Image (cartoon, rainbow, N blue to C red; front, side, top):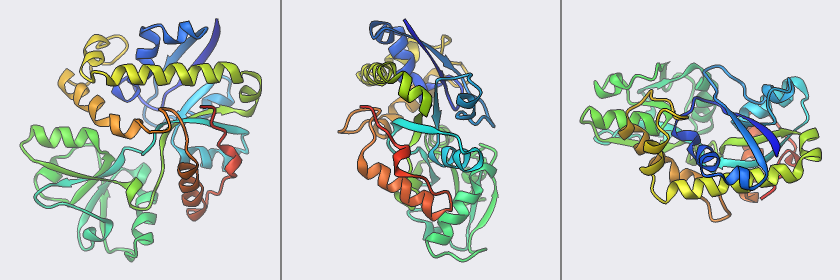
Length: 289
């Protein structure tokens, strides 16, 4: 059995459930692989685990990969993409929706510190002068939006939408992907050395992972219940986990095949990173499926 260690960007929730399904249903083992999935946490830079030898594959954001290459010169390759569209976006109230960045002029937006630079660049790119939008910290609490203290919040759009509905508020969401940041997420990243020496294992991992995601989406309610507690953490209710699993589906599926990377997607990433001062070579992307 070929062993692969995969470093996630976050904890074991439905964001990664397709990989857990591939393991549970024996798809990795049938491909001759033993896969160890490592949960992530706040503040983790997954691709750094490739450099210290802790992991063989890391699931990363493209802007983080570009920054790591810029800072370290690390020889990395992107072999696949889980989220064809990053779930990062702006959630607002449906009775006072933010349809585009221009709708935020003169209003207040709650933004996590880690995303502030990106949001400020997007606002400027959209033609909004500095100070046109008041930016306040976001602590993953949608209550200020429920109370109409802010116009919107920046987050992965799934969780706050669920929590707004629980509070009796119908949400509206827009992806930053569609408003100036055409980025995928959970890119499958490896070192050039791993790419050269373990190409067959990497292809098999991508295809078995694709099979796991396909199986999961046959019934988005099934595996959140079956895998609850092992390996899915119980930090959210089962209903919340099922909601998230279904909501992620259109961001993962693509006509090119789950875990693939299209030429158009690469074009968007390269152009965006060039614009924000983190240029990368197109050759960074070496899709295997």
